[in-house]
Length: 362
Image (cartoon, rainbow, N blue to C red; front, side, top):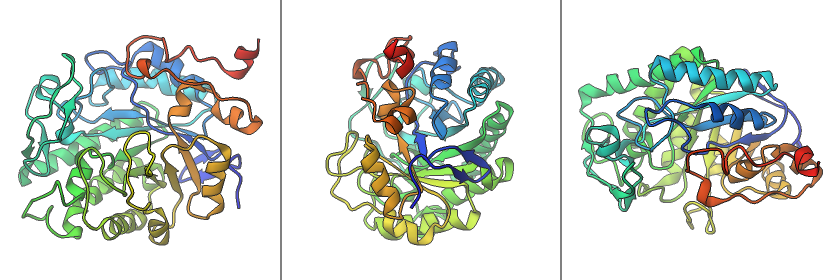
């Protein structure tokens, strides 16, 4: 079995190790959703990851409701992302952008319009807004006539990603966001060709992926799913059937890799007793399979590789406070602890001030 430190080919991307940096929302863009200079430093510091998958990045104003998150729908955003990819590439790194439409997980005070989703539903709890947390609002169902426009938004964001110098794009189809709201039967009550049967509920994922592939190429396209248990209020009555069908669609399209976020009973963000679906998905998805959720040690990650289910592991929170995480894992160096109070704050504290080993030892 391969080691966590062995190279792996992820479509067109030659990754020098199997330690990927998972998407991590950090809230350091401008209020106009434009990446900032400190983001250049942040991503450059983490360039030794086998592959960086950026924080979730909005495909449109409609779909981006997280305060100070970045977007990728206009020229200014593209220009600032290009400065980031240039810095990562100069440091011999590889970087892929995660494309995001939040669906009902937004608030009108942030996006300037009513949220949209598969159906007229609302998430329990409160949304992050510029005025603090506010109750989630009921989304309006996307009209059938609007679906082509939505897919066009994914195409534009993909074209912008390529112009910004990214090595590829990952479609965020997980964590209870828009595509996940179409996938799962407790959020999708449509009676048209995007609702009802599993085949219909997978349709939007298939069509978005096909469009992204048409621009970036299958070998530079990835997808993230969260197949087990509730995720921000969305769930499914038959997760195995749904997500093996989704994985088979993605396998047929030949994407570069599939990432699964699979929390367990003691998950940091979300807990569930629903079994992990990766063993079943592995049977139908033949490309590289990347597992994510609460991996913090070499032993845990290597066990997932040794099982034959995973080909690589995406580490999340540990990359926040350990910019040189692959080297720390390789040498057994202690891991620095992160400060949760600075996860989503603006400014350099808790963002670019975590030292690398050589700096810490100096």
